[in-house]
Image (cartoon, rainbow, N blue to C red; front, side, top):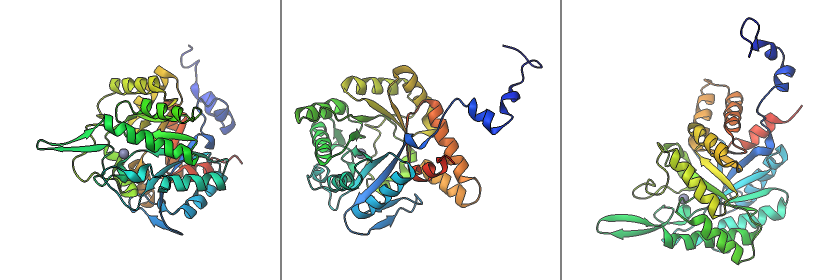
Length: 330
Ligand SMILES: [Zn+2]
């Protein structure tokens, strides 16, 4: 390579046209997925304090928000449900007329071209707020792995029966992708892909989400099943397992603080990789923007671009609709 003064990198930065021509990473709306929270009722838009612009929506309002995002160019949504009642078997998670199942049917009827991904987990439906079945002993509590798999598989199948295009297990139980794949295949849903939350870290960045999904654990924490933040090599093993079990897309969560993981997952496996910009990532940008400390649009788009540059194909973000509008050509 030439050296200065012969080599002058600034030559390629002289105009917007030239910069776009040599841009190494493209950010466009077709990569975006909008997470949405649905609860029972009509005309309900319950704001979430720590996530400005995000609401718990009744199914009719959900369709309205999804339609607006879709209109702006967002191709897909990721659904989370908030049930009316919770129990110790998460029965609302796999009820045929559960909140997610109802919402999926409505979305597919009203917006057939919108891709509907459902989050598959039990925590929102469990009275204790954990992602698996809780076993209490004198020594304390533990989250049972293998008995939980059956409930997860049943939940995923009920979502697909309702019309979900993709199921996304987020529980971090071992072996759940295989259990879900087998159940879907058994029921004839052989074409439905699984997007697994493969490397989901036990992160403090989830704080605001727990208010949104009403899924905070009543005791203990999720460190016995979600990944420990210092571990990157282990994240690759988690991804390898999920791919062997039948996941066709894998997710890293959170996004911005874990770009190295996204990069390594994409580089090592080459599978479609999703980055989930989680609630606190959203909240931090919103809070700073509200104070006038940052340019919300520029910081949001630069963050999403960073996820793309790290290797993410799929960008799950609460700012999907705004980002899609900002990215509209012309
Ligand atoms: Zn969960």
